[in-house]
Image 1 (cartoon, rainbow, N blue to C red):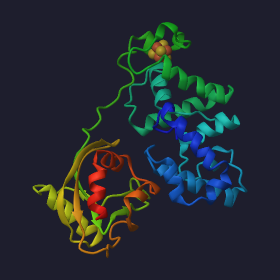
Image 2 (image 1 turned 180 degrees about the vertical axis):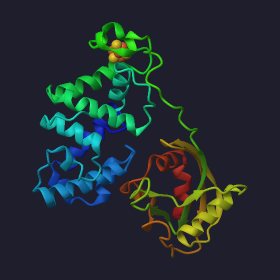
Image 3 (image 1 turned 90 degrees about the vertical axis):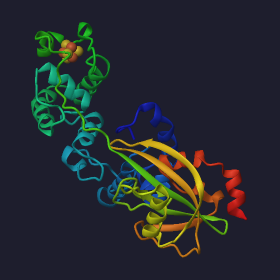
Image 4 (image 1 turned 90 degrees about the horizontal axis):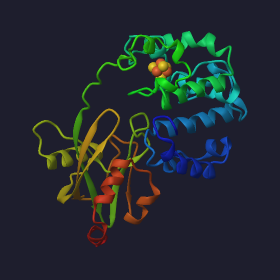
Length: 325
Ligand code: SF4
């Protein structure tokens, strides 16, 4: 949960998650929808799907016990070199360095490395340099100390070199490069997409679609719709996308809301329209499943944050009257 997410955000999720899944067996045997529902709002849903699959592998292949070796940990879904190093060293004292963004910055400065820290090669370089160092230390203490040093003292801007315990051997400090190292290439501008979706009603129910597992937000439910094409009216986007996704030729009733949302690699503006369906024979053409649900049952499904923003922006009372009639 802590990958890409702050501790304060994670704490309530962590408590609820452990209450619902108190051990690896409970998690392994739970339906994926339950796992995603517990994760709802935390983002990066592939973490939840991978954790679920990893629990199943731990039960099926490792007799319910997490492997301890750095390489073995990486055979589990969702555990890459970074997480494997963190788990192996902090939980089991395996001598392997943890190289996160903080550690990269600290050692790019400490050793005076001027390679772009966005390049994968520098991560490997620092990992290789630290391997013999961590072997002479208590791995859990060493790794956490360096991560903490990066978070609190060797910060991205204005590092506090005056109180830094490794200042005497730091190349960046000695050569007055603490403000210019590490070298980091400029990120590409974040693309922006306009999305049109429909709250499609038919006889007191609305249509939701389940996203494909393999893609972003996989396994979550959403309102059918998609990206606006160049020079396309947004209403056309809504009806075209719904037809492509579900086979339904809907009629637009009225606009409901416009929300904005930012993901890591792009931003969206989402227009939501109230639509009427001619019948309820919707198909799951580009999703894994579609369902007609009562508004009162929407809470039983896991939705991405952007869809929750839409739900929060809609005046449900008047809509419910219309939908239920
Ligand atoms: S001396 Fe300054 S730049 Fe060098 S590691 Fe310490 S805080 Fe970072």
